[in-house]
Image 1: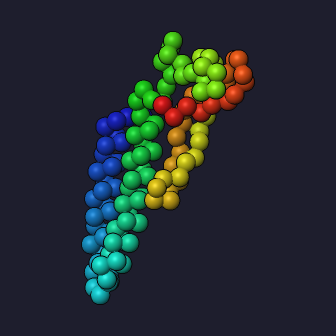
Image 2: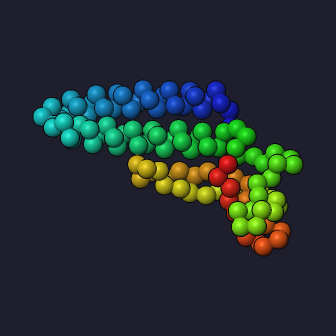
Length: 117
């Protein structure tokens, strides 16, 4: 994932969100404070989900560093990698995001783990 491209996507999404809020307000001139807040929150939740997903999938946290494999929370043994897997999570705003991480299995107790690192 290219950090510059991701940053440009966030900028474009932010601009579209702001324009959308302004257009919504023009269409709802009598909206209450709570209605305005709900509309802004809905749009911000979508933006938050995109930024959260991209940030989680960028950088070292998405990769295991050789010799620094996570350990099993049950027994403390180093996990063995089983390849990258995708997982869907729900954000605080209720949007679904997908993150990709190396899945591990404990060679001692057999517990499968999708580390949050």
